[in-house]
Length: 502
Ligand code: GLU
Image (cartoon, helix red, strand yellow):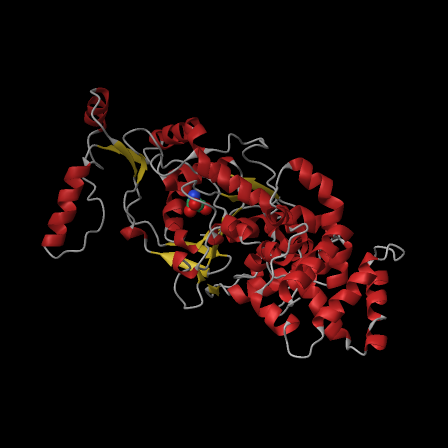
């Protein structure tokens, strides 16, 4: 079965999540591919919420998914909150579409009512199992009911579903998948599937076909867990006489152990990665490469390049491996490429956590100050959640929390002259004629080395411990510049008083 789309038609793709949980890595990748394909082809990216499973779908999950998509920067052209010509874009609000399609199928005698109860079907399944026979689906008991009899039963209010009348002797169902290539499924094993349940709600396969048609979807790009649904959906397209879109099924994402990615491997939802301090640019780039490549080599592919170059022809059917080490490395690359303003915006939760205050007034008032932290941190971070540990000391005021190991190795080391070094630096830092600027302060302290016959390290390391509490820290004099003279001197005094015997 070949797609009967006309050449040159505008691409229309959709991401169709079921709001039964958070946006998982696999779903996020599907969303990215649809979005990037629309952007690369000048097409339209539609978002549709598939909430027909009332037990598992929630409005809260819908909101979580929308938030995650927005965070990743995957803007949709049509869908919830933005509207569009084929709305509503939430399946439970589209019942009229499915009802109309059902009427169309009834008129063509392409569906029939089935009165078999769940219990009866269950018994048949159990009997087949007991007899050692494979259950081959619905036995078509109601397929040839006299239409008048069926109508009487419907009129009498007898519960019934509507099943697709799969044509007898249908040829194998074939289609050219943009990723998997030519696919062929025997039609005779296709069940007369239920399209509409006894409560009037559409099944997944029916709703998807109605919606994809109504929304003029040209390419269905989705996970290969739906591959086995595709021949069924093609039967529905045929029954309705609707054009069949191009399908592109995406392979699975596996953990490093080769098993399907799951909680066991760590975070699985987009929001968890956001909360661990991964950037949205990193996630889009990294997930795009789980099954697609630009040229087989390039790993840093910013979103504008992705939106220009993405195509279905470079999607692989090989399963993709989720490599967290690569993700973390890539995040470091993106952090180093940010502007200070973008950094402050993305890092807000962690900057505020370090400061112990997250109200808007505080954050806005400190924006410029926070931006000055960017050059001190950029080279030293691979995740934004590492920020609080690195900058906590800046918010200690006059207090200092000394790391015991750093004190032993830096201040108390035999013959290191740490007290002398601290006193000399204190004089420099107390000198108001030296401007409170890192270069001036650093030069003035460095000038002490020669007369004191001290190596710079032996001068600066004690000072670093006295100011930051630790022998490892972000650049010292740049940090000092961001603190007040009062705080700096108080910490040196405290350290001298508490570490050295008087
Ligand atoms: N709602 C389906 C899911 O979340 C996707 C259906 C489709 O893409 O056809 O798995």
